[in-house]
Picture 1 (tube, rainbow, N blue to C red):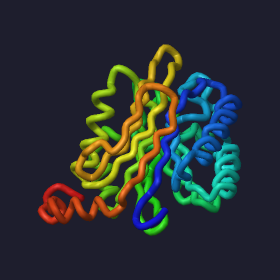
Picture 2: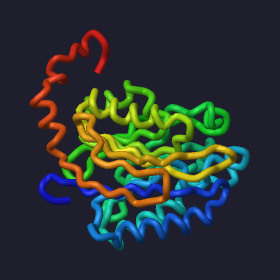
Picture 3: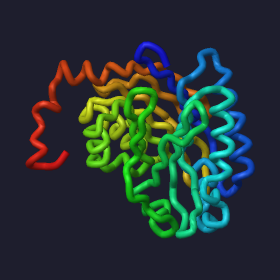
Length: 267
């Protein structure tokens, strides 16, 4: 990261439902491809539930026990390449059940943030098989604050506003967002950026699992709601450079935050 710029690489990839071994091998290949690209990224972002997909009927069996396999793979990669990784999210098994968990790793392989998804999506049976988290995804990332939301969380503006009120300048959203709701995906990413005057970075998967198709269209949206970069519906690595000062500039030019009345309606 240099001069207030953050180079982001989004891994828009397919995921094999119920096959962690194949997904871990594929993730390792995609990470190496991103690291060896023409411009080395500062952070790599991957989709939601990449280790298992939504194999909910076997999720306890398939989930990564305490995230150990994920932490070993990603931490080794970060130390080798000196790159941050937002490891999308994984199915993680603990003593009290399975959660949909996102890890943010530093360049030295340390875990900077662990966030368990707090809004479970009933249409993908999450609420029947997973336990919800009980905290927000907030991290310090080389001098600025970053926020993490996972897929369905994007539909809850209260969560994004809470993160923005904590000083977040970039909001990361790993997802498995399916057809036919691409309009919602694109609109909500832009809305969260506009209303909070922050960057929003959405990394979605592609492919098909269990009869459900996923459309990709990973996006980076600036604090004015303009699309800085958007992928199509194929596997790809989407790269973009983020100007971290753009959030402050947007708030100076349009002082929405100074006009808020939080004593009446919250943060």
